[in-house]
Image 1 (cartoon, rainbow, N blue to C red):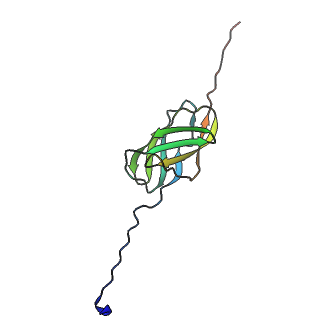
Image 2 (cartoon, helix red, strand yellow; image 1 turned 45 degrees about the horizontal axis):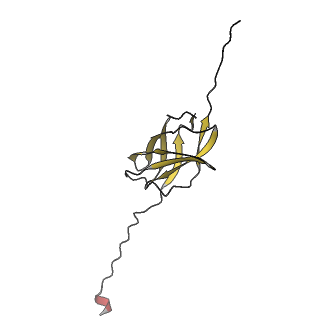
Image 3 (spheres, helix red, strand yellow; image 1 turned 120 degrees about the horizontal axis):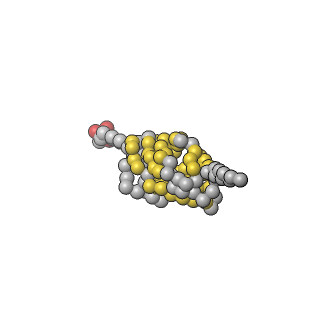
Length: 116
């Protein structure tokens, strides 16, 4: 009989969307080498974490290191010019977030001293 059947349904959603919420610091030199902390949600520990820094056709990538489900760190790559870029994360090296959190690459000031 139908009344003797117990239906039990348990759904677990383990593929929660990855998102980038903030970065710290928010700027660094075009020469790169800034230790960047990326704050977000649903990060997982994989060996394929890639960080993309992009503005139009200007794109650079870095390897990310998992800290916990809300933090990844990386060292910023060198960038070709001063500009505001979007920082996105791919846990599988291919499918990047699209949250649009920004990082500013600034130029370095050169001072030349001349003597008479």
